[in-house]
Image (cartoon, rainbow, N blue to C red; front, top):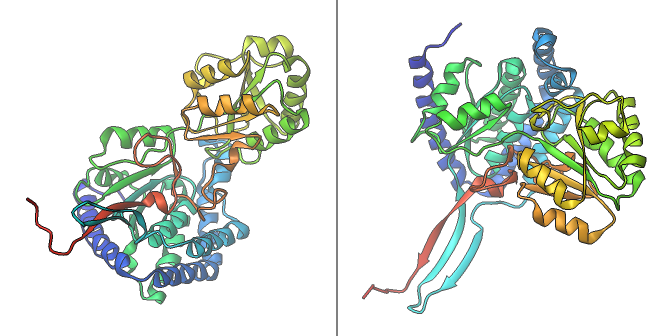
Length: 423
């Protein structure tokens, strides 16, 4: 049933008001209580695994294969292992140090005033996400631990799964005596709720979009709320002329094909001209055996004539599929130049045994994450030790890379005196 703009705005106003009160309550709770709520939510997810998988089966039954690839569908799929991983993720977040109340800096002025910069919650987070239902659990866990309330709006593809996950987490919060309004979800995937969130100045403190290019661009263009942007993941793996061939084969295969539908998957292979004649055919054969297809520049096709020619825009495309763009470059500077022209400042990797070349590459990047001899798919909050992530920030304000607990806090100042007055 279509939701009117007025109805969506009214719902959001009520949700944000209760979320604000819940955030204030969370911020005052001892860390042990917030951790207990996370453990209760994890237990509730395990108890509700059957219901969550049934809801996911309904989403998969409604999935139209014509609207997305197998890799896109994989992002939607939940399995018993993935539900267990969601619960484990909440427990891992609970085990992390409390991000609130930390003294970030402290100094004493000549007049005797002691000034402390102390970590504090942001407040109310709005999270708009699309097909990956586990995003809701990760966002809930990180926000609870960091003292923030979160309002979720899941996508239409995962609406049943998202609702079932939220119901389990809410039950866990209730059992732990923590305000259930700390984690809320829009009643449906109607786009009116997106519009209401975009216009929620004064109600939502930070908006995080997690989805495709069209969603992120709309949020950035229309939001009247600060946005923590997650742009495309046009990630590059650069095979330098001093790369170990076996390492390059292993790392590239994982970076592209482990899960091609995630934002940290490599979308472009750059390979040095000095090693391309011998190594490129081997890399292509490895990936082709795994079902990968290609879009190659003229230099790559001169070595591997069977590769399809890249069309205009291919190197600017986040495939999110078993498709790889391929280009031959002449050295580190040429690789960096290609990344500057075509990248999205997400994650780039260099494969090399030459430490000086690696340092030159990493220091020349402006991307949020640079890697040396590792798969780009390690760009993940869990892999970084954050327990989970609420997204990968590629903007240049507040946070970059995987966004975990620390990035979901701001700070305020505490000034301690003993009767000072200003002259």
